[in-house]
Image (tube, rainbow, N blue to C red; front, side, top):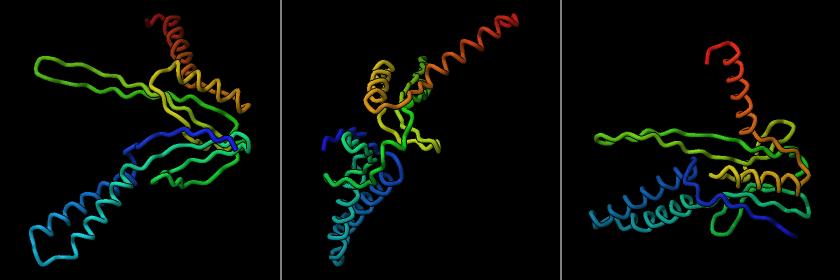
Length: 183
């Protein structure tokens, strides 16, 4: 059984990471409270337990496993090498999509101001019901296109590049504005 593993790494986002952070902080508070009150012997083991569970949940890893031979895919949540998730038939997904998103941030300091644009290219699988499954994220557009084409070819799927579609729409809009004499 040949399985391809695409790890998203410790994402530090979402409700599980938040719960892990809260548990870890609660554990630290319980451990500190033991040192402040000598009669509370029960707080230390509970505090250590909360701290350990919180750290485990906080740094857990998310990713995708693809069983190429059996044509199955699994979105997983990894806690100490145990992967939780449900296998789905890869044939339910028909399209590999490259989605584009950008986030602009303004940074200000005394006499200096700069804008930073972060671009992210996400590869997702889409089925007929328009449900999406995130496969991988890229910062470089060229790397995302290569992965999109290789994955689609290997799994005999259609491709959809929303970044190229967006560029075409912008070009059409500019041409329309030029014809109207607005540019």
